[in-house]
Image (cartoon, rainbow, N blue to C red):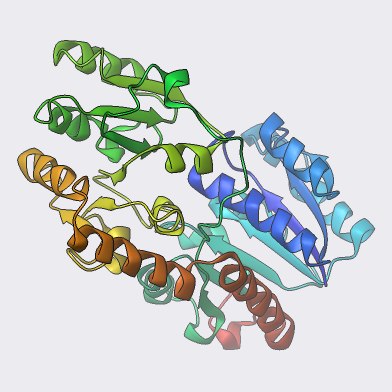
Length: 354
């Protein structure tokens, strides 16, 4: 199998991280791959380490007008892949029409179908995202579910002292962009109701200064650590007590699978993605979006060392093994590639192109 990946994502983010993890995992399974993408240092290091070839491209509006799709076509002619994989909607919009190979479009959210005009099959990360693509007119037999996986690459152990955090303190971890959609303000407000507990915020984004100001306003500067974007997610999860997903909007949330993989209690909002997978008092602890008091209560309960919490954590890990392990997730991608080869190019008789 030869796969050409086209990735136009940001420097950091959950979808971007998963694309890198998936490419690395497929390389270990002997899949021959090449990437066309933005030259973000973290991503380039991953491709280099996996011995996957890389061609840089900016995917700007200028690139679109100055022959970006033509460059993709030339790379297809050079690499001669079996399948072209467009990760996320901007990459999908750059794929030129008329490629002889089937094109797989990947949806990590409720993306606009106009960006997948040249895709022959689609892979959505949740059943509801698959349903969205079908409602928008994509033929149902060409849309698949492919979960992101929570198997994390190894990273050196983390000493809490390195983050100025007492060993005996309860530590809550949020792995997220600093964006209004992610509900970081609610978890800060909830922490104010949990005396002595610490909060690690691992991520970067446009609202970082806003949340730092709110932290100071709430008198939490001594108990909150803004860590910026981190590549040691496994070490952070191993060192925390509870993982929190406070999002207002979350099409999926890879951290669900990561917390379950690492046997950490998960507190999640009722955003669309978590709602499809996390059941209160079964495999996690659920709170309604923006309900700060409820969030604080669920965080407090999740940190308790009780038999009930242990059973919930065990169920989360079982659900990880069944749905989100690396083996399951990579096989779903490989099955989607096989389906693309079997079904071939989409025609108007199939319900497209758009």
